[in-house]
Image 1 (cartoon, rainbow, N blue to C red):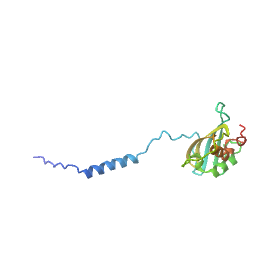
Image 2: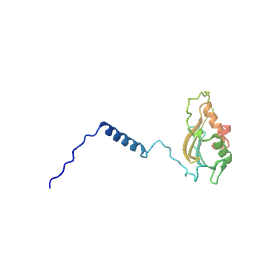
Image 3: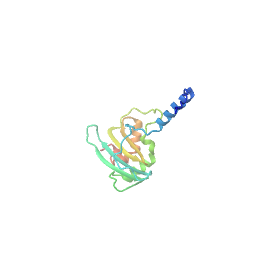
Length: 162
């Protein structure tokens, strides 16, 4: 019995282009691993309206940090919060919104003044999204953010006493 041969058909440039585009599409749909994604030091909240943050405040760059935890549902603090003014901190976060944890989209003009050496690293989840940002008082814009979230950093943070 003789074998039948199938004639080979050269692939047209259109077919090759479509296959290449399909391969690129499939690669772009694959999940990616982003090593720059900040890790949460707190357990994720149960719902998107809940917040669970760890706050590490330093009075000076050389000093030890003091650590506290804030758990909120909306503007109300939850059990387990160790921030002194927990309800005020939750309310300040709600008022500030998620933009407080993001870099400005457009360049800002900020006054060149130093508000103090204090820093506060805030990490965890805010409304279900992982956040991590270090707040300081290196210029007028940073001072405004610091003052907006002062209850989060401790009762003395607004007065510059830590």
